[in-house]
Image 1 (spheres, helix red, strand yellow):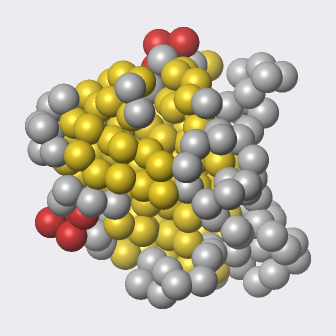
Image 2 (cartoon, helix red, strand yellow):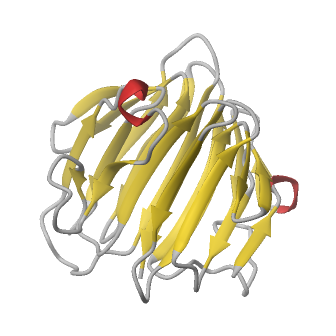
Amino acid sequence: MIELRPHLELGGAQHGWLDARHHFSFASYYDPKRMGWGALRVWNDDTIAAHTGFPPHPHRDMEIITYVRKGAITHKDNLGNQGRTAAGDVQVMSAGTGITHSELNEEGEPTQIFQIWIMPDEKGLPPAWGSKPFPKVERSGSFVTLASGLSGDADALPIRANARVVAASLAAGQSAEYHIAAGRKVYLVPASGRIEVNGVLAATGDGLAIDDEVLLRVSAQEDSEIVLVDVT
């Protein structure tokens, strides 16, 4: 089963400095049929105006992955962590017992991010943060794991959940495959471009909620960048 969720039909909010689209219920957007997808609780598509951003605010007991689509985001938290994550790269924050952080666009252009929240397997662990560059050449034509709590994904940023975040960059005409283990779900969003997934077309920002599929064949109709979350 593959359900297409068009970008224009997603929930959203316009705050002036922030243009947000919500794949699942979040803040003032509520849809009882879209409360998450397995352990995936939030997928926000945020455009943040230059020299603005999210001021310091707290979180706890959530795995928060930020995938930067355009521009860069600068992170600071009360643990002393800070860093700049640029387009195509990813950062992970394990909120654990509690963390206060800011996410600012200090660039001279808008920044676009996917903000992905996954429920942890265990609550009450110490908070942590990390980021990692993933050069696009490494995921050209195939999926590469960016963040994972699964065994065998040692090169990925660690998360405390039975989940995996992967990405691929496909040139027009290229295809890539992703195998889904029994009992797992996938949520897939093109960060750019236009793709076909097992016969279903999706364009930039569309969501694909995928269940009861074994193999995904993703074909790019134009140069495309794809992000996928694999959860139980």
